Image 1 (spheres, rainbow, N blue to C red):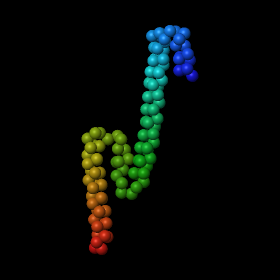
Image 2 (cartoon, one colour; image 1 turned 135 degrees about the horizontal axis):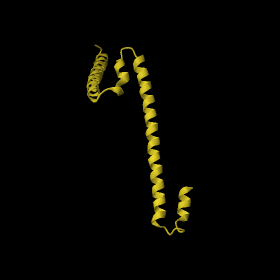
Image 3 (tube, rainbow, N blue to C red; image 1 turned 30 degrees about the horizontal axis):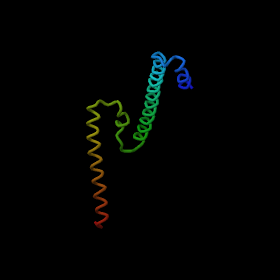
Image 4 (spheres, rainbow, N blue to C red; image 1 turned 135 degrees about the vertical axis):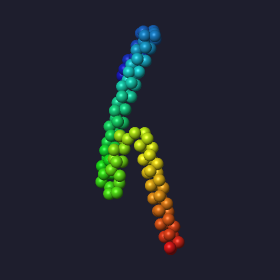
Length: 107
């Protein structure tokens, strides 16, 4: 509706610089507010996801409870944990592959 009013008033104001400035300023303000809205929504979604994952980690027997609060770790701790979990994943994948191979060969 606002865009329509702005467009209709163009000939009235002779498509002046002020007329153009009004729509440019308005769209800039709307864009700025939308960025804040999107960021707020993403922050809430991320927090909800972190809480859900933390709950699952705490509930799983054998899981490291420290991973439930991973978002509070320093960069160095995150890198160390990434390396450790990558190694665990690789070992688990190799163990599964060995089991599958043993099953396929009948050993």
